[in-house]
Length: 394
Image (cartoon, rainbow, N blue to C red):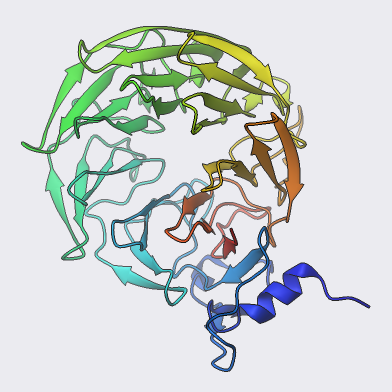
């Protein structure tokens, strides 16, 4: 009997990443967020590397969480912020750091206010801006700044409008554009700009449509492409462009499908790949390309698996990796996906790659300095969020 690539990779990585010891995937209570233990083998050689395209389980999060954010900081560590430990549970204020050198997590300064479905934007000076989200019993307008040099948070000015499930984009001039989302009265078309120099927010032009869960992509020409989402009138197929020089929005054309819970990734050639998402009848597998040179949309190869609420990341070789999500049907249950696939922009074709050890949605996927992908937390088949973490070898 031959060994599987995952087993070979796990053995080769024994001294590089902590290996989870425990019953993987077993239902756990909310208090079990740190009960999964990890240990490191000291006998393997540091020069060993896992086979490319395989997933390795690394040390679990200190606190199980989903609907959180994860950001690679300038020093290469990954900062995970907020979220929830169970479905629609109280938002978390806890924050933790992943060190890719050791493969372990450590606690760092906590938020002033617990939040989930917030935004996190790395500023040019290395600080992290966290804004909005669902708080305890309300939607938040508050914003906070994390300083990696001190591991602490400071309050900054509140947004003009409370919002969650919005987009946040770092502009070329260092300011942050926040757009759409939802407040206590419904979906929003409003947008605002954060200036990190003076720590203030100002309103900018409203979008042409109100959008909850839109994607926002900074194009190479400095414009921001906002796509899809859920509006007052239903799920959207429209896109629009923000001009930071004028503070105005213009039409960005219409996709072939409405999309909600989709992904948008800027490709090396300047086009934007939009894939998957939900529609009224369930999840979809279709994908489309936006070409800013022509302002037009065109169909490209469909994913192998229909999915939404997944993660999509541009890898260092120019391919796009999509991971996990849910495959929605007209009626429950919603199957949690462990599958992953790669998109090749040169051919427009998707190919299956190694599957996750554990299916998940509402997780994060963060590209690390070595080209590996860190997938953390998320939701699974139980009401409790996942503590597990996996690394995709480049």
